[in-house]
Image 1 (cartoon, rainbow, N blue to C red):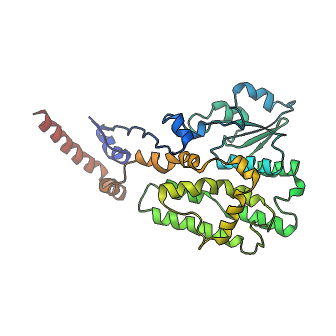
Image 2: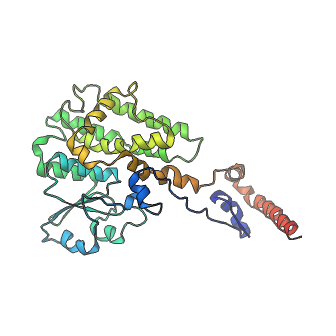
Image 3: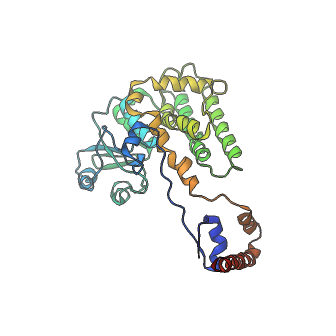
Length: 329
């Protein structure tokens, strides 16, 4: 007997030998022109653009070899971490000195990427003449040291350097993603409160600044770190949750910073249309939720009284068997 029930019921039906039919994968409802043209079978995380071709297995030996003369940044335009490195590269005026290659992320991420390119499996990753540089902010700092030491992205004075390090250490934008991906209506208020607390914390860090950026009139690594997330989360949260991540009444300094960053040529050259970023997060915001059966009263009962789960399952099994017999008559 196969039932079209969700995952939580499967735990209850398992002892009876019953299986829950998996929910079909929902089709995306894309909003960007690019993804509509690509079709519902396309994935934004597998869409390179004109900034660089797709990484191929044939590239590996020439990139990672000890005698390599190539400086290659491997990333994905849908990924905010990759955007950090690409944004910094343009700010430093070094985009012509570094080759950019796209790597698919998600289910179709090539196996060789983790095995031979980056053992951490994440993007971005920089290979500079045979030397591996992983992790987005490590890549940003490496690029700043190599191509723009005078830019002072990580601060010039001891006080500035300390402030930049402090903000980078204390502000974790993954809190915003937790709210975006939250599947439990009862957990939404707490997830939203955590996100709003995070944004207030970031707003307070800008309180002593005399300019639009953390370091006054100079762009810092803090903006490099957070602007790519704002570019994605602002439209995605508004579209899927009806929530404004930045509000002029609650975050006036952050709003000023965000307006100023968006006008920078380097940011304009490395970002995408906001509709594309909405499509990037369709799956975590909507698609995965559609596959999950909300926890019902039966599932909650099993969690609260695990010792009574088997008798309850037996009772349900008997009831279902009775229904089957009646249907056969």
